[in-house]
Amino acid sequence: MSEKDRKIRVAISIGDYNGIGIEVILKTLQEKEITEFFTPVIFGSTKLLSYQKDRLKFDRINFQGIQDANQIVDGKINVVNLWKDQIDVHYGKVTKEAGEHAYQSLKAAAKSVSDGFTDVLVTAPINKDNIQSEEFHFPGHTEYLGEVWGGKPLMFLVSEKLRVGLVTQHIPISEVAKQINSKSVYAKIQQIHKSLIEDYAISKPKIAVLGLNPHAGDNGLLGSEEKEIISPVIERCINENQLVFGPYSADSFFNPNNLDAFDAVLAMYHDQGLVAFKTISFDEGVNYTAGLKFVRTSPDHGVAYDIAGKGIANEESFKEAIFSAIELYKNRNEYQELTKNVLQHIHLKLEKGDNKE
Image (tube, rainbow, N blue to C red; front, top):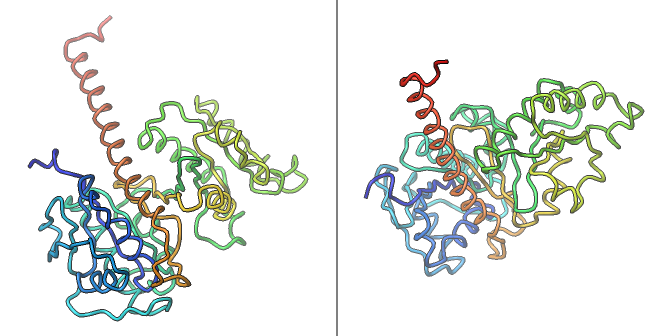
């Protein structure tokens, strides 16, 4: 089978195994026909996954153990064995070892994509504290992948009902206003605009921009960022023939009429966008890191230590993350093929002298 004809290979990092990451992975992959759609490649160990599989009584899953990503067997649930020893799992506990293993899994999975052995990356949740080390010194997946893959990552929360991007991501609320400037707001709008066209096949996207302050500043009464920064940036985008609107007051924006009217929303800071997103798209949302060379998605929930090991975690968001990654990968390839064909057509016309007057 040629590379072009084979099923898409999905690299999966296991996250913090003391949380619900492996549980939602196994629940997603236990469906009998799942490998007809893609080839899963989990970066961890068969011993660790078998332990959790047996504990959770997922009898229908069989693993294809391999030692390296260059040994992937298409149509099987592959597990790249990064560790030989049995790993002690302590559900609901924060341990240094779980953080170290989460990083090793992420590092190997990301490398398999950049090396071309897998096509997309789906990450299970990490604990942003215990994963920190001399090698991993990032606020989260988003910033790490921006470093190792290159590009300007955009945290983009997506579901069927809503897409939300953020100007500022994992920073304290006291730092947010300092990071809101014309350059940062404009850059994020352009990233969203580009992603909607290339990743979601929306030819003329409509983007709503939220204000920073209560009531979008109330004409300067409650803050000046809207008048001095956000509105001029929106005007600039409109002059560049982009459908960008706002700034809107965040407290009244997220209603059904607005959600239907726009293809994406740009929020100024983390909780401004994510509280609404997770309320509206509960158990269905996906975290997509736009702006990178490769596709990465994840579920929109965390490690959930409080329910770890109980078998009650909902896998829908993780399942959506996998199928969203596959769709994004296909959309990107189609866009690249289309633009390549257009450029080739223009080049041929120039060679024939069709540009002469």
